[in-house]
Structure formats: structure tokens, C-alpha cells
Image 1 (tube, helix red, strand yellow):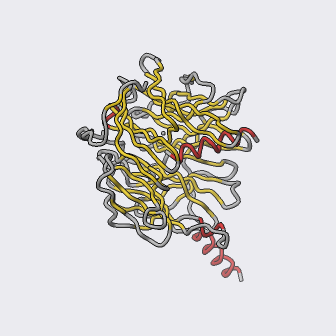
Image 2 (cartoon, one colour; image 1 turned 135 degrees about the horizontal axis):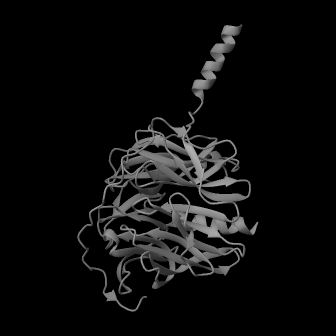
Length: 393
């Protein structure tokens, strides 16, 4: 009888997803709610969002060890920020409330980390995406309504912008390709949601996925050679929430070599991927169906070694791999408190440092003129809406 019990225990233990003993360090205290941290390109600083006592959201930066915290935004309500590739500038945008239920972005601001000077870069209708391209010399901005997205290339120094192209219909632009000149987006042009790629001027539209399920782009690998995406059944009034839980896939940027990275787990929902700097690993947020527990998980790029880095009384959201590859910053949640924390990875999960991305040649202005006088992803907007609603409860 004892032998049988021992065998059953062994089987149970091996069936569990492994956990990791990497050290977790909390960098911000519990006096305010702090979210969505991002590393500076050299890994020496972290930028994050913070609610103050007056329920105002601001952009802050601090050293990677949590020291020298300072607020850089001056707006009463401010959205997420993004470092320039050389770390000398930060772009962030303002949030405006047009109704109790609907938030959107408009003004984009530029902060100089050397001089602390703030400049209003561009005033657009409804900013949805902002991303640095060309080693920080240009900004890729998407604005417009849900039925018509307009793509722009913006010069942050002389506050001018160039119209690139537009997308009509139900489309979601994901990102500009690192070290490349292609734009990744999700569209239902073929009937259900699939992943497409195109040139910035709207030419060369290529459908990358065509499975019966809906596919949604989640981002490029650091070198721009691969795409991570989710695949899930369409949620309707008949199917349950389990049919909406995605499987995670990766493929080459031309749509070839599709591989399922993480299969569907009916008890957990995986989202918010972050590639390791060398592209050999990924971290995710793994949330249970009840929504009361979220953890940071890591997995090798071949789908092996899925491992939990957080657990017990700590929820983990929005992981961000450090440029050196030895840490993961994330939003930790304990009860009602949210803070910026860092996981110091053990040798098994450390990555080689990030490589410098060489800029590509400037694109030709085939779809419009340069328009003077104009002084960042759907995931970011969804996140900001979530945290604002969280604070109102």
C-alpha cells in the first residue's frame, strides 16, 4: 500500500508545471499604485506608471535598483511612455475622457532625459499606437476611428508628419517590424480574423495565417524575424469561455514555419508576451479563468520548459525582459496594492544581452506630402482602461 501511495505522489509531482526559485525584489512601495514598467535600452533605469493620492496617473522613472524616483509627466492624466532606442528621450501621451466609459489618447509628448525638457510632439484625433522607428529618428503613429485607421511617420524634432497609408474595416495594427520595413496587423478581410503584413505605404499586403480559428498578432521577435500570435475559437452565445482561451503560436515573419508554442489550457489564459533579448525565450502573463490569480511564466522558444516564476500570494502582470537578459520587471499585485517588482533570473533562464538594431533606409513618401505644423498599441490602451477602472472601484 505504501508503495502505491509513493508512486501516485511521484506521478502527481511530475505532472505539475515546474516552479522557479529566482529571487523577486519589490522596487516601489505600497503607498501608491504602480504599473507597467519598461526598461531603458541600457537597462539602468525603469519607467513606470503611477497613480497618486488624487487618483491622477503619471509617468515616472527610477534607477533599476528602485532609487532616485522622479515624475517626468506634467499632465493630470497621462498614458503610457516609451523609451527611444538610445535612451535619451521618452514619448508619452495624454488620456482624455469623452464619457464615463470611454477613454482615448490625443496629445503625444516628448521628454528629453538629458535636459528634462518636455515638448508637445503631435496633436492627433485619437492616437492608438506610437512606436519608435529608424533608431529613434522617427515615430510610427496610428490614429483614427475603429473603422478607419490612419498610419503616420512623425519627425519628433521639427513636429512634422508624413501620411503613410490607411486601413478601413475591422483592423488592428500591432507594430512596425524591428530592423525591417513592414507593418504587422490583424484583419477580418478574409472572413475571420487573420494576421497580415504590409509595407508602410499600404502595398504588398500579405495574409500570414488562414486557419478556421481567429488569429491575433501579439508582436515581433527582437530581430523582427518571427511573430508570436494567439489562435482561438470565436466566442459566441453558444460556446463557453473555454472556447475563447487562446493557444500561443510562433511563425517566421513571412508566415512560414508555424509552431504551436503553448497549447490551450482550459484553466488559464496566457497573454502579454515579452521576448528575451536573444529571442530564445519568452515570458507571459498567465491568468486563471476566475481572474483572481495571475502569474509570470517563462518558456523556451521551442515550447519546452514552461515554468512559473511567481505564485503563492503574489500576482504578476505585464512582464518585461531586461536588455541584459538577467531580469524580468513586472507589475506585482498583493491585495489592493500594485507595485513594480523585478525577478532576478537564475542561470537557466538568463538570456544573452540585446543586440543593437541597425536602422533601415528611409521609406519613400509615395502616399502623401509632408505636413508641417503638428507639434502607443491596442494592448496598451486596454491596459490603461483596465487600471483606470480598477482605481474607480
